[in-house]
Image 1 (cartoon, helix red, strand yellow):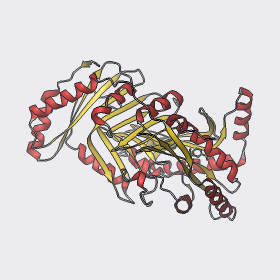
Image 2: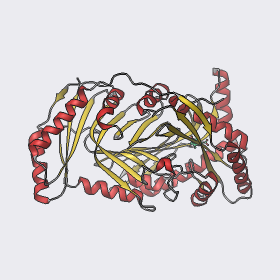
Image 3: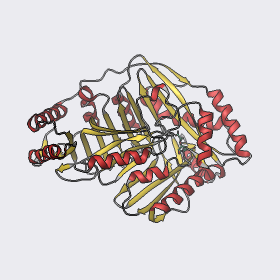
Image 4: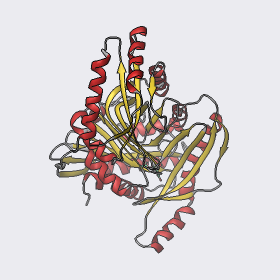
Length: 468
Ligand SMILES: C=C(O[C@@H]1C=C(C(=O)O)C=C[C@H]1O)C(=O)O
């Protein structure tokens, strides 16, 4: 049983929320933060399986500063708007919070926090595997664990009060559910086996890439990112818990996330930050240009040197830096960008990496930055609108939430969004995995194909899929 170490005066605040709901005849959020015993985030996630399967979320940032685990949906926010999905979600979130009653200490990533994401391109037709997801989908967890850099653990309990609620009954129910969640330890999970792993139309993908290279050579566009899909079939439903465990062991230098929606789960370990907002501080990341890791230190260093001096990769990278910098300049007072890229090395691959920082203008939310930055040329291309059309026509699949923003936002408009690459969708007895690469006029279909094989590796390992 995880102990509650410090309890705020919850009941009085809760009764205030109920009476506000009665007076205004509107729903009012009650959100309570308590300090709890140290708990392993994955254990908390697993404990939520019985009661909240299909309503759990996980987020661990790549610096280890913040882990969030959500169990149960106090409220969901969805948008199916095509052009205004970001602003629609932001508006719903802000309106929902107008009369919220909050109690307990306020720490970063505690209190009302919504976890979720957006689709890559809302114009794409929903393919079967993505039907549970809207163009914007966020969950406000009923119970959320927050672990900060010091290892302090907080539990936020969120409950939506309405004019029809009886305060005593609702309060007791919340306490009961919370105690059950904190005392539940899941017995060991039975894992399923992989039946087969199938690449979807790899030959057609290479042909398509070659035809796009021809158009790039003619100067129609500068860059297009093309992605493809691998299907893994299991002999039963794959649980996201087992995949998260593997990702956490293997990919600690990445953002690790999961988002359960009914019987689907979007899950991954991405190295790419889209944007982080903490008060006025903005941090974005340009990540584009890739090469394999070496088997020895010398070989790895040799590959790093090749990447840092390779014209094609530097060009791919520069397009991302340019776009992100220009857009941040519109939304920030100061923008700082290093003059040349550094390397980001993760387990299977190394990338060119440029962090871009800024000081946000007043009144901005992290979602305003997401709206402005997505899709960057790291996942779309240059110019954006042409590249998006080529992606839609050539890929012949729906990216869903792959390559799109996933993350969290709080009541103050702070939060962080990653670009959901190195990811996949668990649905039914299948995992759909996605990977892509930046294509420029000097690209070659076979080497880009090989690059996607490297990018599939973390998720393939995590779900247990095998490729010959
Ligand atoms: C498209 C992906 O990765 C993107 C493409 C990269 C490249 O082409 O060099 C590097 C990092 C990401 O911005 C992916 O992993 O699926």
